[in-house]
Length: 388
Ligand SMILES: *Cc1c(COP(=O)(O)O)cnc(C)c1O
Image 1: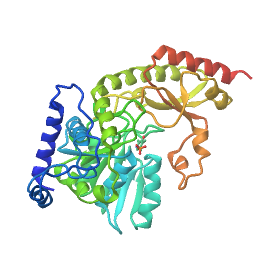
Image 2 (image 1 turned 135 degrees about the horizontal axis):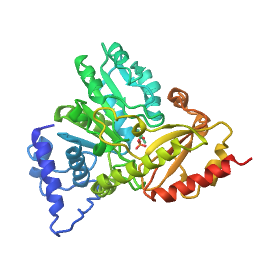
Image 3 (image 1 turned 180 degrees about the horizontal axis):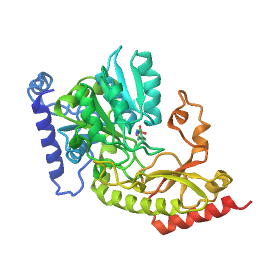
Image 4 (image 1 turned 90 degrees about the horizontal axis):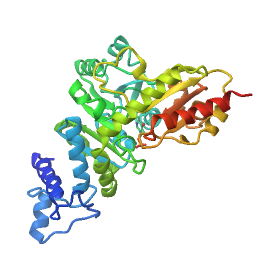
């Protein structure tokens, strides 16, 4: 794709903001196609002489608006929006590997990424080796010959946090393209590109959207790497972000910094109280360590804890009222997932075991309901779960 594509697309986003109505919220360009005024105009567009939307799978102004905002937030040249986080992950990885290649990944990556690596990529004869990302020697030992280095930090159950900049430098030294799933921290608390990572991706279904009403993904990086993804995997696999979902994400991004601070403060407060609670064995929250790993500027609302032996996880879960039982996270609402339920899942390969999920662990997302209200809810659940 030409330079002009990106410049023109940025203009479209800016123009869209003006939109002719002085509307503070941009309109949704909810259309599958864009018509031409003449044969010659269509011909010029096909020849690439003029850049304008033709078909929404290729270019849509509302989607471009979101991509431009996210690229700015991550300090990237460009970004591409996808229909889901998994679509962003699969399109990104498939843009850079071919049969015979090897990927090095930190252990405990998102379960469906783990399954993508263990099924489709394996069938394509792409090998994936897992390493403990906290062990830089192990990473350096695994990297020679790897095409891609895939990170997620912190990991989303046991919360292993890495020195992302150091790992990115190792990858670069070995000629591997580095990719990080930054969904947990969001660009508010971690800017991987500024730490030397090549590509940063998100499940936008989590904090970027922030209201639990959209499933989407995004990848951001240098013009050159994003052009590789935009040139093949994006159009051919076709996991395009829809204009309406892009519009919801533009809305979500406006409040991202405020929400992230609220999630951080409430979650840290709850994590510290859990750490002192007699019915809790261990709390996994990166903010409880003496210091955050370099590059991590803050902590979000997702962490896990392990109940002491004898505490009934079923009664604990069923007593909660404010905090719901539900997968996903990043929205306004508090949610738990009991580890024992995940361990019972039949999906193959089973990432729960690879994750090291403790059967008495509980993953908690701290929402925006207020710390005291959530703590009362948790205390009632502890009381109910301990009396037998
Ligand atoms: C949810 C999630 C994904 C997958 O995103 P979807 O939008 O559900 O496809 C990827 N990585 C992490 C860390 C996630 O939590």
